[in-house]
Image 1 (cartoon, rainbow, N blue to C red):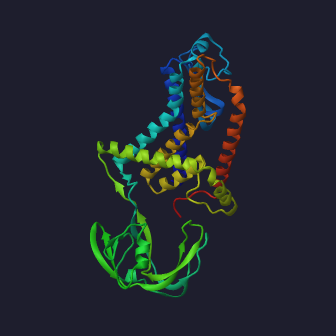
Image 2: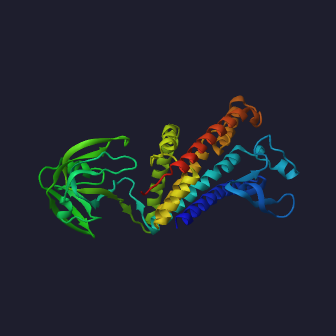
Image 3: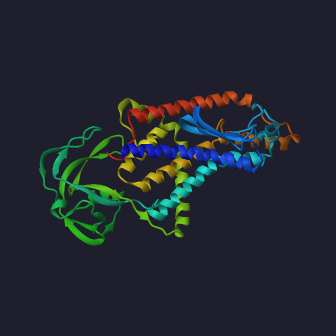
Length: 410
């Protein structure tokens, strides 16, 4: 199932790219431009057909390397060779600026639409995570309590040192999956429960939710020394205090919707996810050291970027566990990421072409004359730099995904 999940997610990524190119193609056709070719994949042509037949038809096809796709619109720049009267008449660079901007934005726009539709589908069928609500705390394990433990490492969890006494939590009747709703009468969640337990003195009253039923359990803690992660999660520090012998996990809070209320819920979730994606894109450069460390040490942080290969592997993980809501939310997030990255105002991305169109319009308004399309040869150095930097970054992420793949589950 893991392998099938990887293949399914990879196919969904390819479909998302093809959908992006459909946006460009349909917008170009709607605004009177000439679309010459629409292909899924790159490299040698595996299959193609022309519709309608003849030199003015569009060639549709598949290519051998399924790593993207393209929509060839006649006259995207002045450098484009125009071979037929129809191409010369309907060349993109001859069209009104609003038409060109509409066509350029339509590709990323289709990714936004697909992402929002996927989120809406998950909202109706499974519900959406409550983005503004911290996850609930839950008992993920009960174990014995030692006076101290060894310091944990990447390859070795902490081990007890000395005698290991029975877990007070287990003796009080706590079980795996019990939600910890309060500590000594104070409501807690996954973010606050550890501090609440460490600061508790004497017998601890725990508000527990099990199978929807609330109850209160009193636990007599023992004193021990443990290792807690530092704030930056890069090291551990020793903490001595009361312990009840449990490992705390999390339960995500899910909002459920009907088909009508899901519209607002999906819109809010899409907006929040889009904001987080913008922040993540802005942080990409500062993730380079973490990626290099991951390649060197094999220790990969969950907050590091992933390539399409790595994303497919994560898709395989969640498919293996039958977590299809997460599968489609990951795909939705990927579509938002693809759309937003393509809007960056640098060539050869769609946003770079849009920036050129806007520059031409502003220039003509300022000068009072029409000087024609920008000479793309002058933009070639910038394009090469962007391709070199972007290609190097993608290669770095790909190597990290192979050497130290991201894993959602241990």
